[in-house]
Length: 141
Image 1 (cartoon, rainbow, N blue to C red):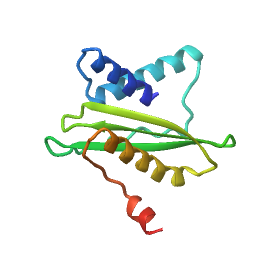
Image 2 (cartoon, rainbow, N blue to C red):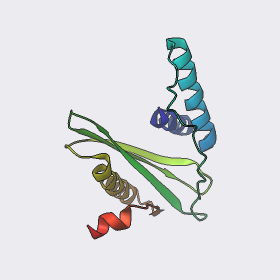
Image 3 (cartoon, rainbow, N blue to C red):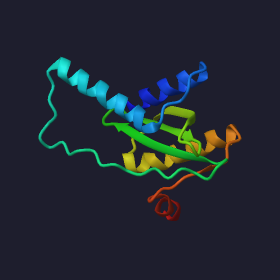
């Protein structure tokens, strides 16, 4: 749902609109999810923990930041890789997604998402920065 919100914002910008701030995109997605759950009579489980706020550190002025993630559908052998590139204002400049076949865990898929994101940035001549707690460990392995 979040990628749908990002894609929608990207399309708005491509067609001449102004980009939404990331907080507004997330709020829109959460409102949509809540509305959907109410209409379907679904309720959050008691194990749901409230979302914590994570501060996003923008890149330096004139630079771009790459954010990537991966998801795995258990049992069917498909991995989803995706990411977004934002400028120092938090505006979305580019998004990518890729479906890959392979029986991988999420932990092993995340480095693939980073690699695809760096390839995507290089193909589009975008010099990006990124931060990952796990990347140094993956590089040593």
